[in-house]
Structures are given as structure tokens and as C-alpha cells.
Amino acid sequence: MVLDALSPQRRRLLLVLAGLVLVLIITVSVTVVVRSRSRAVEPVPQSEPGPVLLVPGYGGNLNSLQPLAARLRSAGRTVAVVDPVGDGTGDLRAQAEHLGDVANRVRNDTGAASVDVIGYSAGGVVARLWVRDEGGQPVARRVLTLGSPHHGTSQAALGADLAGGCPEACEQLVPDSDLLRRLNAGDETPDGPLWATVRSTSDQVVTPVDSAALDGALNVLVQDLCPASTATHGQLPGDPVVLAALSSILGVEAPSAPTDSAC
Image (cartoon, rainbow, N blue to C red; front, side, top):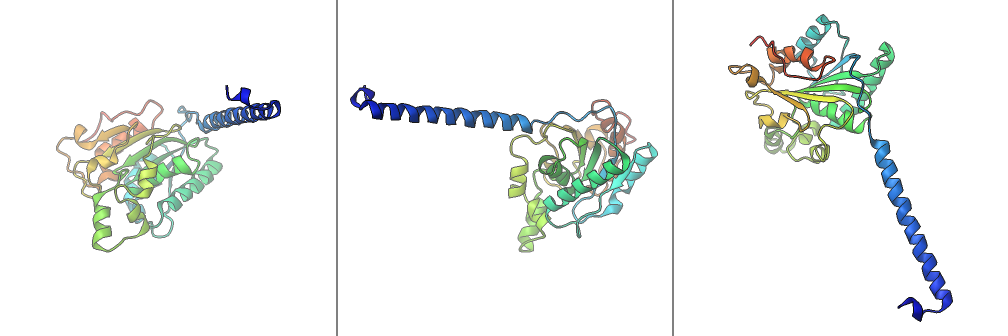
């Protein structure tokens, strides 16, 4: 054996070094396990719906959210519309950080333990970034996205090519952008909130349409419930399927597709 050829001193030194290496391997392994466990997030309690945060799309048009706000308020829900950072075309990560600030402020003001979030268009990507990277996992009870380009949209790619570049949020919504590649790596719907999406086959802004669906979410297609619907991207916030989904998705029962859509 190799050890037999060594002097007793060198043999002891080699054994000590091997022991230290073994201890180091065990320590690193335990650290990895502990860190992995510390990142685990308990599901947010579902029995007490809190305020609903409405996140606008690219460009930050708040008027587009009014049908949602009106329906939710008529149902007795507290609603906060999230103002965009700047003109709403800047870094989506900054928008996500701002969403976290609004969520904290609203929870402090109302005493609510959690919030529900509806992200329209790019606002749905902002909501996912908040949950994944900005502390939203233990705070968001449910996340509903409407026509959101979770996997990018060819329209952003076209805009970037034709214009020789477009605002940062537009660049981030190009399919396979660095931001979307990271956001969609692994689990598209992290633990914490329950997830749902709504999309329409008549959407000409988020293309392909299935970019608006998420693995692990309840994915509702407007035309599955209203086959004759021609709901465009801009019409989604006021679409009958979407408005009916507010109660079936943001209630206390498990999220489900609405059964009472007025097609």
C-alpha cells in the first residue's frame, strides 16, 4: 500500500489532511441543506383575503385597470392601484421593487397579513419578479396575471429590431431575454402564493398567446369559456371572463375557472 511506503510522520500528516478534507465536505453539505431549507416558503394562509394590488402594463396606463378596480370594490375588496416607476417603460426589476414597497405600505395601513396581486400585461411579469426576487413569496396570497408575456412576445422583438433598440422593459420582454430566461428557470410558480393566468387567442400584443400561460398555474383561456370571444389584449381587464374570474380565483376556495361568464 502507498501508506506503508511512507514514514510514520508523513503517514500521520496524510491521515490528518484526509480527515480535514472529510470534515470540510460534511460542513459544506450541511450548509447547503440548511440554506435550502431556509429558502423554503410556507404557503400563505388562504382563509383571509387581504387588499388587492393592481399592477399596470408596459407604459403604466392606470385607466386600463379601472374595470378591475370597480368590480373588486363593488365586491367589498380593498384595492390599491400601483403607480408605475417613471413612465412604466424602465427596468421591470425596479417596478418589482416598487411593488414590494407598495405592498408593505398597504399592509401596514390595513393590518392585513397578505395581499392579492393582479398583473396586467407586463405587470404580470413585474408581479412574478416581486414574488421571486423582492420578498413577495410570504406576502402574496394569490397572483393573477392577464395577458402577460411571461415567455416574451415577438412584438417586443420586432420593436427592438425595427427601432434599433427599445426601452429597457421592452428589451426585457423579448423572448429569451436574460431577465425572462432567469425568471423562468426552474419553477415558474414559486411556493407562497397560488397562481392563475388568463389569456385570449385574439391577443395580438402578446404573441404567441401561450406565452401568457405558466407551468404550475391555473391557466384560463377566454375562448374555452366564451368560444365566440374576440377579446383583444387591451380589452382583457374589462372582459366578462376576467371579471367573473375575480371571484372564482381570488376567493377563499381553490382557484377555478369561472362558471358564470356573461359571454
